[in-house]
Length: 233
Image 1 (cartoon, helix red, strand yellow):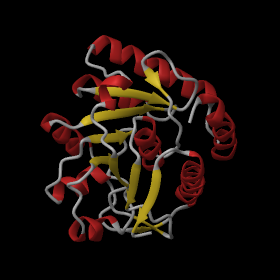
Image 2 (image 1 turned 60 degrees about the vertical axis):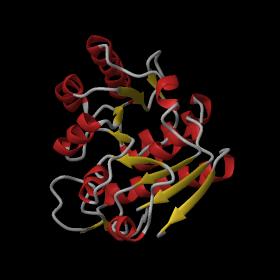
Image 3 (image 1 turned 90 degrees about the vertical axis):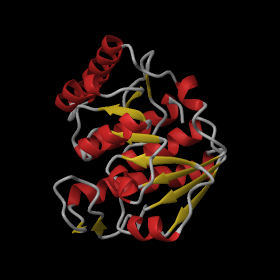
Image 4 (image 1 turned 30 degrees about the vertical axis):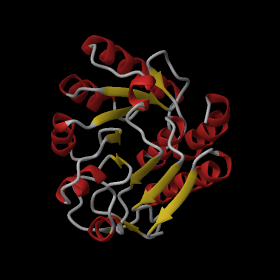
């Protein structure tokens, strides 16, 4: 998904969720500056070699735990959406790539990064404080944003960590994308936020995010080159 395709989705999201375009743009600039300062950032071509023909994208839905116990994921690239990193580590799996806006358990994201996981860190108006604290202590980072892309900060489309991870897999060459733990129901998985100790009833802003994420994944299913499949939907 290029910027022109993403732009109408983005403007709807900004309007309905009450976000600030200017704050999102400012966050993208801050992320770019942090990446240049650290000089350990990735270009898309460098991350592209990590993504194989088949990619598993792990969301944080309640079905994730059962899926990790029941299925073998050794035949594809493992891409974790933010908090799903913790579930994978608990199951003895190391994500190849973590897509995050730094809203998950940072200690687990840092642990996986130290063990070799690549990071795709997303900038938006509400996470500038986390960017400034955590980007300098993390490594092997590809930066993304939800406004117009910059030279080393990309926008492949997608809104939540989960659907952005699917768009990333598509953009970087996967031809088969399996979505794991994408439930979009009335229950939020306990991995969605560090403060959740158990699965939780969905709250209104999360429900809206689910609706956008599902719409975007349906767009990708119809318009992308990769075959998109849902596990445990």
